[in-house]
Length: 426
Image 1 (spheres, rainbow, N blue to C red):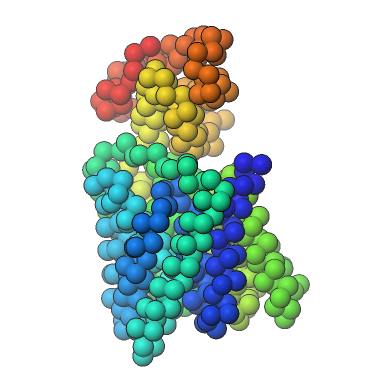
Image 2 (cartoon, helix red, strand yellow):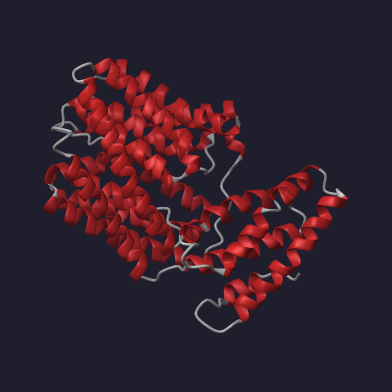
């Protein structure tokens, strides 16, 4: 039920945004822009309070600026997009507030790639419609979080060093520059697929392994989603109401299935976009199948290369730091926070779990041991003095802490002074 509630909290704002904007405007781009912002804001785990609505005009101004610049010359729009996203990524080094501000400004900008809005000869009209679309989406996301209580699960503060965020900004700038150049040179009017793929793979990657895994999932999701959507589009034909119902159903399924893997989410979004393009008459969906897949793979590679070659963050180093944080939190008795940290730890370990059969890593033993304590930690978060749960937790933590200290003190590139400093005593 908790997973279904989370899916409803994500999908309901999207549906409400579409239903609200369709009667107000006959511009498909504006409706899709609002839906894209609702979809991405609904997935964000950051704080989403009423004060965020004050940023809506600023976000709409960013959208209008990009639209006007891109309408004037592709190079101007490309440069504005790259600089804005890179600056928003690097801004996380200044603290959580700066990171939230950057994400709030980037979300509508990414929406513009999904639903390009042509300002034509009236940029002010574009700004007004974009403001309405973004404001509508943000309001519905806020209402959904209040109704379903998801606002209580605010994101955990980042513990990465400031220079890591700065380097991620550099990586995103290089990835998007490559994606714009390659997409507009090779894929013509479908260049946005390459840029969207580069952004989704690289934007939230915690490590180079995470970027590689997301690239694989993005490719598999695009393949499955495009095949499904192409078949549906051909079967539905000119029946637009049925196509709209299918599109919304695919997105609703994606909001639920994303908990089981990023590939499901990538497949649902790709299928929805394919159905959308069929609805608005953008080309032959069957003929575009190969082009879409190649563009997605190219975009993923554009994100993977900088993440791998420019100041890469090793997955093992991330796991050592996350493990130390979790051990320290348990030692301090904040069991509810530890349970949430376990979710982050599990996600961070996904790249190593994917290759565990071929490359066993000692970090996964720590993750397995901590994840096995999740039921006891939930018990302790409700009853901190439960003797049986305390005994099991204390017994399991000692070996994990000892092995962690041995790993960070040992020779080789995996030793990390930062991680060693964070390792708590047994």
